[in-house]
Length: 376
Image (cartoon, rainbow, N blue to C red; front, side):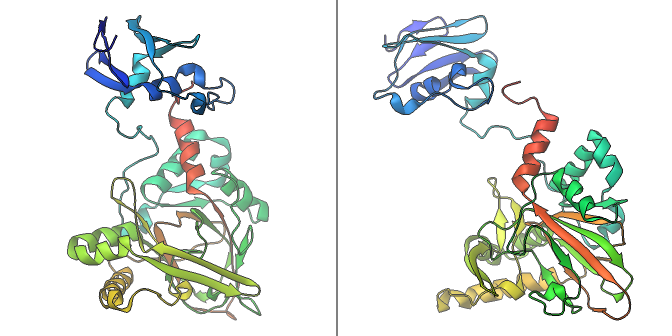
């Protein structure tokens, strides 16, 4: 039957070509078709229940044709008929990534962004799905948003973060308290200045979304420092493409060693997405390990690294403000670089409670909120 036309279908050795309305002929592999028969997916769990590994040879259509807007295939050697709506096939005809409603264009921002930060009320988030969607979109597009009207309780942070996913522990625990500790294990637990950084790069998969709930803040000093790492990286790409290449292709080591912990991970300072666009950055001077790269490579890597680090400190990018009690700043830990000015520990109280969730859960919840999905 190879090469024989059956209505709008042409059978070939390893698949078939379907003449799709509006878009024209499209080839589909036989393995792919058999594997993705609509009956291959459990209607309750929406997971694939068909095991293509049981097929020893390339599946062969005995008959194929178009019927009522669907490709219908009767498979040779098995008692099975597959029916594929043409609207289901069309998105896969070109072999490109499936469209992702959570893949929103990132909007870079600069030092003057504080007045324009998206602000959402904690009570409204609990009650209003439109407000939750606005919050999610701010995190996906700009990487940062402030939740106001937070209750002065531990539960308040838990309820807020849990709206975007499960609490994601790090080696600091499920939660951490940023205040002056008698025996600090991190610079954040002192009143010293905290250099601009992203959190927990010493973990193989560093946390995605970070929350800092301000419970008390009456000290002198301690202004919050935030910047958009993608804005800085994009500017570096334009001004020094070779430095950008080195930082986006070379993995460098990070570590955390304290009280029975010896965490190590390698990260790229500039993170690219599947489109080659800047998705974020990883930077932390106090958790950067000794670079164990070839010394000749360091001849070019260090100048690029230092140039980027100096850009991060530029007044063009750094947003300076004071987080007030009752506010919780939420941000993409793979994009937003943050720090803190020094403060006087004896001048008042300063307490921020923090936690994390994952970026993947944020995207998953957003997709479910704005689209019907394949199995609706």
